[in-house]
Image 1 (cartoon, one colour):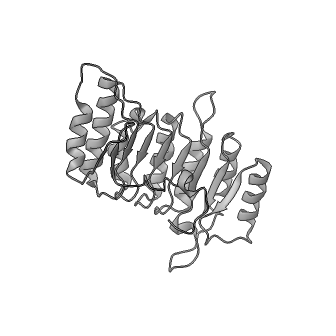
Image 2 (tube, helix red, strand yellow):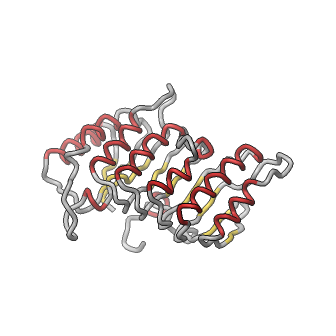
Length: 252
């Protein structure tokens, strides 16, 4: 995305590698369409005599996977973890039509997403996650012990969903703090101003956001929608907290 700051390749998953497909650590790439998610799930689920999977990065961005495709992918990833010791580090599902029911299928029947626990980067940008989707992700976040980069820009949740998500960040179930370093959950359409959208701003979620910041010691960057008002009490409180915790508050 031209015109964005120099960190975009790192923070936003951009750059020359930002293509649809499944990529293993050896650099091989496979283009995946919606029906291909079933074939991919089948391959992941195969028991290769308990040999350890070398797959570390899976990029399916730009492909409409459908609800059944997300469910199949979740089943395949869970089986690969059990059968082949899969430890996926990066999962890119940007622009795939992911909604709350698709996320439920991806996380599995208990919605804990234990098969995603090894992730370092999770890209869910430009999807259809609403308030319920953000709430579900907030609960699932408790299994993502090592997640350092969470990309959510351009989804459909507003203050209610953002608050639930940050509550999930703050209510960490272990003594080891979350590894989260970057999050753009506040860069979503309904939180901004203009383009015919209702204005929500930060007032409805600021308390949950502020509580979460103290529980995220590794967080160094928080990304905002550029349409957010800069002169209200909630924004000023967020700016003060970010200054206190040495967090870069950035508009893309």
